[in-house]
Amino acid sequence: MNVVVANTEEQIQDVFTIRKTVFVEEQQVPLEEEIDEHENDSIHFILYEQNNAVGAGRFRILDGMGKVERICVLKNMRGKGAGRELMLGIEEYAKNQPLSQLKLNAQTYAIPFYEGLGYEVTSDEFLDAGIPHKTMSKHI
Image (cartoon, rainbow, N blue to C red):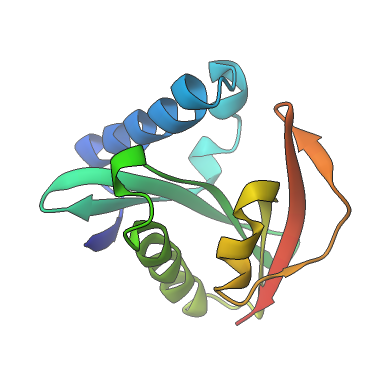
């Protein structure tokens, strides 16, 4: 598996295809909530398995912290380390920024996954797009 910063138009389209499949089709998040005003301010990442796009995420700097967002992996690749590879790729990028902390808003079912990567819950539960979440953070 290979994580890359999405720089080409084809890579950006791969990012949005993965996100639409996971969030809009599977989780029923309205498209206008999934694709938001932060797309142009974000660094987009794509995870490839043998030249097939299988995961995506984005990163931006917000209030002096790195914010990891829109992490998703296609259903057929879940449980195979794809999410971990994607997160490690984004964290490697973040380590080259002037940051000491990352944060993310995790869907509550995914909290154990992020805890396994060293993130800690820092908020009470809240709804985002009708889905329960908690904020998590990690020092890098």
